[in-house]
Image (tube, rainbow, N blue to C red; front, side):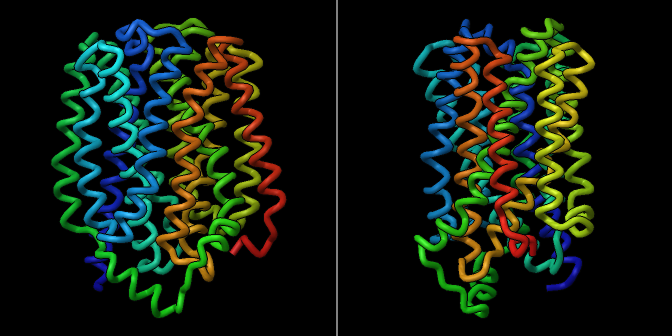
Length: 387
């Protein structure tokens, strides 16, 4: 494969990451308005968000199986189109069961897209020959930052939720159709695995990947909390306008982008383990500042530090899981993404239930505790995992 062809494939996979982040951030930036549109309290909103979690938990293992059976290049383009279609469906009706079904569909499509596009990213990184995994997640974060900004603009111009989400859902389809023609066929990946005599024992794979999965779960629970609750925190706890609340999530997205743009560089300089420990410290510090002071500027600063802290942990974990010795890349990436994205989707509804009972601040303390757990697990990972 020529360098030009490989670059095109890298751009194609990056397109999936961008569209995923851009579309997801658009609707989450307007979550306070969606909550009022549905006429839901925090606990009821948590129930609705749990439908996303349920959809993703059901779909991700199935998507991993389909990818191993038919190829991630074939599955990712199907689920990506379904994800674009799912975005506007969340505001088609205020019927309780339709809302739950539409969010289940959204979670299933998003979770399936996450698993399969990360699988494609592993293939590109292997063929590229050096660490580039963080760059894909940087593109995802750029998409989220621009999506949050776009959501804030639609909110500022008082565009209806229906108009907004239909437009951005349609905008996602053309780039996905283009990128789908440029993906890496999985038979290349299978040949690489075969040449390395990789054999996978399911129990050994699970035992080996479990620490990576726990770290990904804690990190992505925090990321999901910021995606779904940062705007509401600024709106209800700090008591700012909806437009400023949307920008609170934008600050988080910008910091994630910055961290991931430089993530591959710092991974090479510091090593995976040291960088992840530094990241965990920044996440704990940032969320602590936001929760303790709860002012406009302290919240902006806190969310910025949380974004920096969470920025490179997941790319490092997914890359490591896809390149573990004696475990096939498809098994490694499928298990790690499934565990990690379960946290991304389970965390927000859990916070909703805690927020309704104890307040949103206490709900986010739960996330702070997971950041501490993540640090403990990272400290127990041996230096040999820093390869």
